[in-house]
Image 1 (spheres, rainbow, N blue to C red):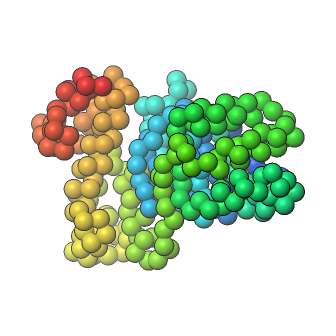
Image 2: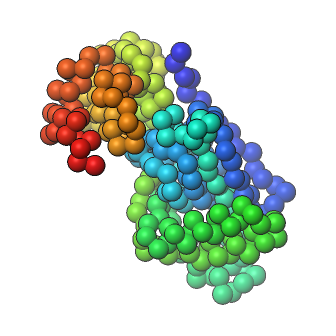
Length: 283
């Protein structure tokens, strides 16, 4: 059965100035595409897959930490193959408001410079190197702390994430116009259903266009035909399986949405310049 695309509403956390959440949930129970008025720091401990943040859709892997400014739509779609033995993924999320940043800056002059640097961020950031390691350590420790102790740790987090060193942009805000919303709906549908047969008719119906208009719209927005994009997405998905699992190549072919093994092999070599077997051997 195909999954329906939904936009989630995230209620504000009014009891506290920030919210800490450490969860282990089934790989397919992660919240759908959503946005909120708060900042979000997200740490994927177990799991990998594909994420959408603003205008960007790309693969992600375990151990990444992302800082997302307010009002940027985002979601993580996890692969079942990289869940734990119970079919679960694990992540830590810290959300905090713009008001908290203002109050910290006002109450603690020592933090003002750090806070201003954070507030200048308009793009989602991924952390690397020593910065990533420090953030991971603090977030894991926060899972063991009381609410009061977590407040102290939050101050440490703010001082670290204010630095743009060891970061890369992974998503920009999007203009909320009709075309962008339509495109976002298409990409999210592909992300959730690429393993299944997807027809031009159902895609056109999804965004209330006829088939010809849909093809013109998609080509104008991406520079690619819809099926070229879908094929490339399936190949990238199969690369993740080749890297992270011991599945047979025939299994990976079908699990990534292809129906014919020789065709999968030909397309894979055309896009990656190597066969699936050669790709796996190079890892």
